[in-house]
Structures are given as C-alpha cells and as structure tokens.
Amino acid sequence: MDRKDSKIGFLNSFKRRKNKLSERSGLVLFMDVQKALKAEKILKNAGYEIKLVAPPPELREGCDLVIAINLVEKPGIERRLDKKKVKYIEVIPLKIDTSNLLEVVKIKYFGNNIMVKAGNMKLAFNKNNGIIVNISGGGCPDIPYLYSKLINKLLEEAPRPKNIGFTLCALMLDITLNESLTLWRKG
Image 1 (spheres, helix red, strand yellow):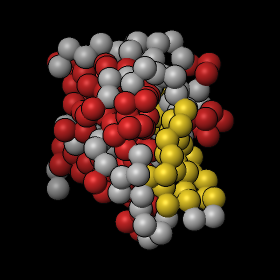
Image 2 (tube, helix red, strand yellow; image 1 turned 180 degrees about the vertical axis):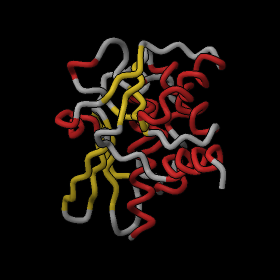
Image 3 (tube, one colour; image 1 turned 120 degrees about the vertical axis):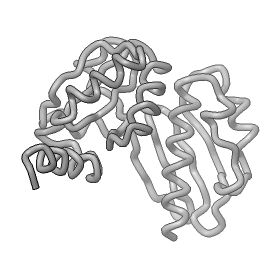
Image 4 (cartoon, rainbow, N blue to C red; image 1 turned 135 degrees about the vertical axis):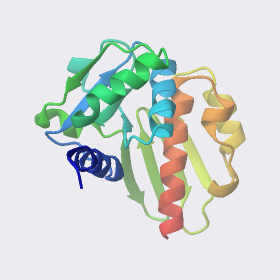
C-alpha cells in the first residue's frame, strides 16, 4: 500500500466511526438553523460522520444548532461547504469540559411512558404500544399544529415534524420522534 492509499484509509476510518465527542471533535457554527440543516444534509451525503448538536451557551453566536465533526476532517468539510456555498461562522475545536452540554437528546422513563427531550421539545410515548401520548415544550407557532398531527398516533405512522413544520421546534420534535422510534424498535 502506498502513502496515498494509507492516508485515504486512515481518513476513511474516521468517517466510518460514529462521531463521538472527544478531544478530536470540532464544531461548525452557523448563523441560522436553515444553514445548519443544509450543511448537515450536504456533509452526510458526502459520507462524513457528523452530528447535529446544541452549542454550549458560551459558543452561541447565531442559531441554536451546530455540527459536531472530527477535526481531522476540517479541511475537507470546509471545502465541501464552501463549494456548495453554505455559509458558516467558523469551525472551532471542542473543549472536552463542554462536551456534556452538547448532547441534544435526553431520555426519561415514567412508568409505562418514555419521554424523549431534544432542545425544549418533549415527546412522550407509551412503551407498550408505541402511541404518542404527549408533546410539550417550545414556543414556536407551529407547535399546536404539530401536536394535532402527532398526538395519539403510533410512532411508526406519525408524520415527520421536519416535513410538516417550519421552525426549530419542529426540527427538535423530529429529533425526539426519531429517537423515540429507535427506542421503540429496540423494545
């Protein structure tokens, strides 16, 4: 194996791993949610293992979403975003002591129900039958509409909030639904 193949293999090994927040992690900061979502889609389609997370309060310069990356891939990620004309504020290394603030999803168990929280949005479902029993949180204007479309629906039949909503709350609710589906399928 020549040096070029070795380097490509090394970089690809990072792409195959789940992006765990560590001393190799960095954050891509954005001014608004739409740019963060567009960047997430572009980078995932390019094969990067990235994670949409909430920034620690001291790093919030624009929107409440950032993309966690492996810093080894910073040059390629910057090139990809520049090529696709997705504006970002900057790419910064992550301080290890702030990594616990970044996890967007929290899970709580309440008897027969499981509540999944992402940002300020919460979705509770019955762990026995997979029916959504409550949605709460946020302050966005589309929450009542999203509530009406998801409440009392089976997790697997509920519409995706990111496809029917228009706000950061809809995105966070979509994350809760996705995580809830994962939990439900694991049983």
